[in-house]
Length: 312
Image 1 (cartoon, rainbow, N blue to C red):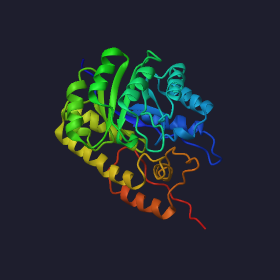
Image 2: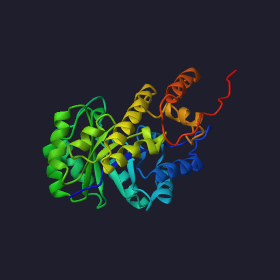
Image 3: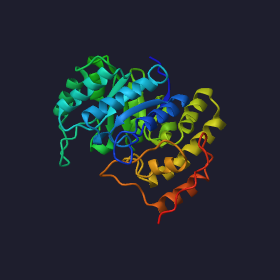
Image 4: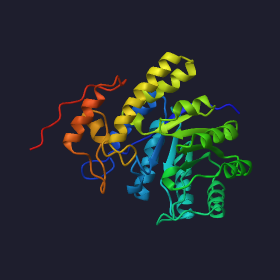
């Protein structure tokens, strides 16, 4: 089964200075993502600060996301790493109620660096996959401390037709190549982060995901557009631009609650909003350094940075 290649942007969640959900900023931001044509993941744990959301706030984020994105671009509920299987089942129920196109099953993290056994892992995924008929994606990421065995993913795909894809967040290219080779005709296979995007596409995978597109959704979509157009020059330039920004993005914490991403977006007049405690933004001197680095990169679709207020 041939599946379309795509880039999936893990959206930020803007908050006000008092810590409330900034609905206006969030809507403006989602419209930027929709205009670029990217797939959007919402209410995730890192870039989205989803772990700070109450159940009511999570439901509101999902509702706004559906209102702004449904029918324009794919909108998926990302969620957070659960401690209990029941937490993931509850999240999937909320995602299904909201009307999003799909949801993710994040890796089970039971605390204190404890890794789940293969039998525990299998039971967890079977319980989650059987809880809903909506399309579901798996996350197999180094951040969880373990990867899902490829044999297990294949067995799950045999049993659950709603298993729609998997995102691999690791550096073992041989493992990634085998993952793509065995699964690409059955489900979407993306890489987490842009570094292996061209490797993924070249091996027959379906694209990449990350938070970089919050700053410029056109920047990340250009890579996919150039790939589809088979324009090697445009692909080289688009990927070089993305990786130049990715190096800056990594300096500010990457997906770690957007510590630098939100201040950078705000400096450019983009709807970034505020961080939510316990996370704190980067210092003003760090922000100015980042702005200087970003201005050297030909990033599409962003204005010149605004004049920042001087701190006393």
